[in-house]
Amino acid sequence: MTTTDRPGRQTASRSGPAGGTDVLATAERILAVVRDRSADAEAEVTVRRGTEALTRFANGFIHQNVAEEVATIRLRIALDGHVASASLGGAAASADGAADRTVLERLVDGAIEAARVRPPDPGWPGLTPPTPVPAVDHWDDATAAATPDERAERVAAFVAAGDGLETAGYCSTSAVHVGFANSAGQTCTGRSTVAEMHGIARTGTSDGSARDGGVALAAIDGGAIGALAARKARDGAEPTDLEPGRYPVVLEPDAVADILHFLGIYGFNGRAVEEGRSFVRLGERQLDPSIEIREDASDPGTVGLGFDVEGTPKRPVELVRSGVTSAILHDRRTAAKAGATSTGGALPGAESIGPLPTNLVLEAGRMPAADLVAGLERGLLVTSFWYTRILDPRTLVVTGLTRNGVWLVEDGRVVRPVKNLRFTQSYVEALAPGAVAAISRERSLVPDAWDDGATLVPSLRLAAWNFTGGARG
Image (cartoon, rainbow, N blue to C red; front, side):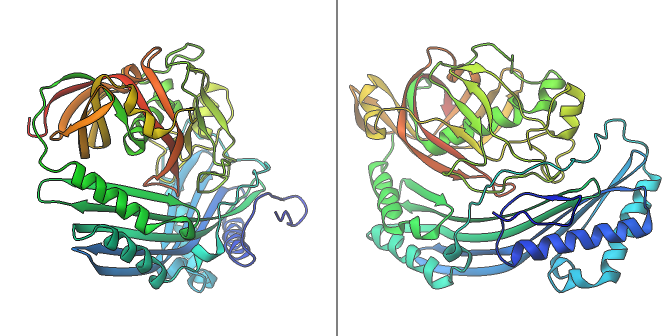
């Protein structure tokens, strides 16, 4: 970890030899322009540069291979509580484009002009002061330099493992350096790599899916992922109808990740709590004693950065301890209203939504994942959920569909595949005291769609899940 900067300013993070230096230098050049234009302005700058690459396949063939440079600059300015943001992307924000002072001046002038005509923001919490950032470094050099051939090798292994089944999916890699600086003296740099493979194998009547992801592409076994997807597809062929009702379930990691996403967005969100839209009652045992949930960017099993878009450290937060709801997430705005400290939950453009999780971790249990089904007298094994939508934020009632494999289990054995089902279920009730029968010791990382984040989750065996009908009604 490197922590060097000029006196009076604090840098605390880890970055690559060149990438971190470049993005931080650009951020500080923009602050210099802000000072030239308005000495009293509060300003914060985030510079993000890197690469994203994707190899997509269908019908057993690679049909798309794309790679692009990621380059964005985000500037937020406050003038006596009048706040405005501006951004640059593409070539203008690249290493070469950002060196053009004229471009930077236009960015700054636009933000200042916008701030002057905006009404005062009564909730403006001010800037993050100089604060140490944890040594989070989810980075792999080989993944940052991954070639199309390396992704194609994993695609080929996935397709071969399908043994003649129709296959489709993708293998992706990304690498990013991020630099942050504000006029209060906070500076930080970070870097992250993410590799992911997600694929489907298909029979004439069923789909089977599997995925893997993490910091390093080398850890992804395309053949193993393909073999699992193919087995699920074959085991799920010729599904039959099942009567709606409440069934005990074993939920695999994709489905469990969906539960945690809703808990984070609608429950542990400090703004939702402040506005009375959340199920959270701090200090109460709302979930089963076996449930332990953390927001923790420093966990070695996850990915992403150690600070948020406001330059605040993403400190570990124990949200649920032995089933007791013990904390919520904050950005600077919700923390100021609550008289608390930001947990590093700010995301770009999410001011109206509130703080969001990027690294939720559900603690593992002791049971092998393969043994979860053995405890079901009669219930369902579910691969994943999709098209999930919130119905009641206060009780966290969600509706959605199963996807990519559902099986009826009797006397601890899978007896037949069933057609996809619609459900309407309170996610809080599903994890309530006494409702969690077992947790697997194995966990999977399920990448999120925002801010290089991911959810680290095991499989769960739950006492009941409310299925309301088939996929068509």
